[in-house]
Picture 1 (tube, rainbow, N blue to C red):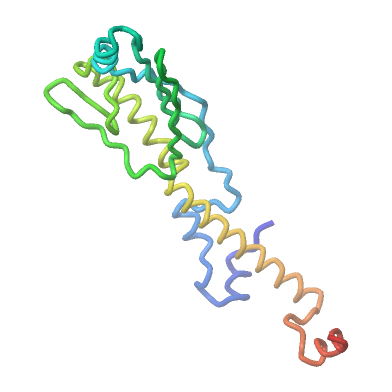
Picture 2 (cartoon, helix red, strand yellow):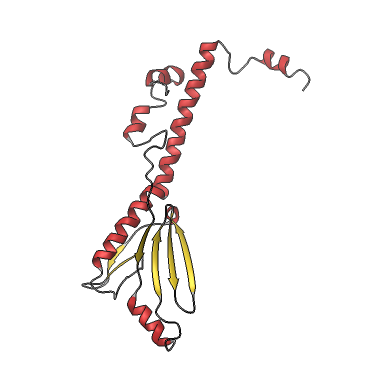
Length: 187
């Protein structure tokens, strides 16, 4: 059981550890608010690039298919044709931003990924961008900072519980110099 705010104030002084403020800022000491995500796939093949690759290789490469797979903690871009089969992994924590851009009146891209023929692809770009942004926030740097804040809150609560237990049991901590000399007299 977590110590009360009064117990924290009595141990460390008023306002040193403010549990209410932490909770108002969304800090959850038990990480129960950490959202899980299902795997999601998007066909993000740029058909213009795929056709150009096919034409430039006289059809030998075939059409390149590009898939964006949104895993629990990372974005995986898979490109496959007859010549190549590659995967690129990008953890959400390393993602700076999710940028949805309009290149002309009807062509959209998200982080330089432009699915379809480039034009009239706004719906898929918006859906992919929104899902990517949600995962970046929940699993990226923001989430890591929240987890660190959660660990700080948990450590403060454990420290307070230990201090209250030691006080209740009448154990002096830290021990006096005499006690230390007695325990470690040979070392």
